Image (cartoon, rainbow, N blue to C red; front, side):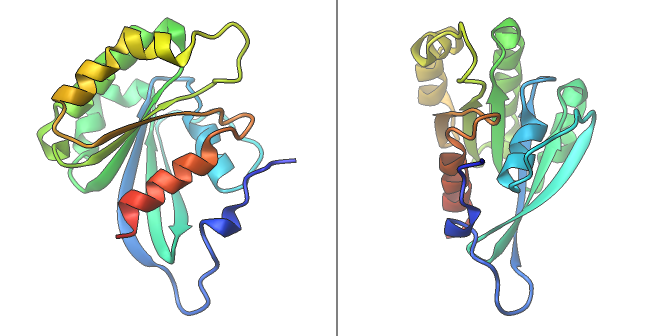
Length: 180
């Protein structure tokens, strides 16, 4: 059974509808698990492959957050979605796609509309056999250099959307940048 208890982070609203906290973008290469993450955050245990964009509403401390997942195949038009978001989750998981994920990350971090936007870099699929260690992946990304030179506040987490590992931390981060 799925171990994430959303009631601890998103209590039901007893009066009216939740106030809107804004838009969070979920970006990453094709096939890294973005759709599954969104479904798991909604406590839905299955997901179909999504091509394009997907909107998901989450309630965090009586604030409605809309998470817009934008598929990897839409990378060239990601910047058209940057204007009105308060946070960005960049998804990196597939070792085969690590160089393209790094290029995508650098283009997101250098975008002018996102200069003060909170960024979560999420290393997914940590439950897969024969994976590189998080230290090795961060080294390939040169994560210390990226964090030191980026104008945005950057957080890195590891997770498995499939097993649920780390998803509580993702919700905690989203709540911390949303509810102020």
